[in-house]
Length: 330
Image (cartoon, rainbow, N blue to C red):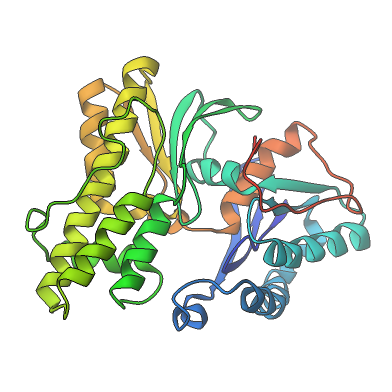
């Protein structure tokens, strides 16, 4: 068994995965959304203190499995340094105290492995990773064969949802709030620019769209409920259209047989429907993680660690480092 720990942002999670069968034996997560909602986003220092309380509690719940674990896995990058350190410190202590190998897991690679919880990994695959902090397309050939094909030049897809919600005073996290509101709105009431629509560049950008939303909000003050819904709907339509336009260009050259969407924002049903249509157009198989595993969790960290175990990708407990950076992530 492998015990895995996730603390890259505002979710504390611990899981236990059986190595031979890849079966998930235990998983528990404590979210911090309520504590951060009043600030309209994640406060790193607060998140770190909350992890310091939650992680020991989760480890206590996993205690029945501790005598049988063969390795400890932990997210060490990318993420918030002060929160990553909480998980890494716990993993170091367990590794040293029990004499177990330590597996350092890249958070973004773990999101890819969210597709394979309790399953065999299936590669090659083209993957769109969309979350609160990342937007990128990754060409995945295997555990060690991952190439970033396109990434965002500024804000991420999920971040733009959070900021749109914040500008309308709707709360945090913004993704599910905007999605629910958009379902009640008219996406065509307000014209919204599609980022990089006429640019040949294969990249993503959401800062201009975010600014267009800001100007629209200012112009339509005070906002009634229908206007909020219509702005949310127009914004979501433009953001998804942007993803589709750039991914379609990638499809035209890569011609993937298998395509997946992972990350917290992959739970958005409008995104899923739009990409189901794109995959049908190109004859590609669409792969999606179960909704339970779209957001940050320790089960995906454990599943990634299983493949790392077989490849003997172990890290010295005293030299493991944490990093917020996403460059050279794979």
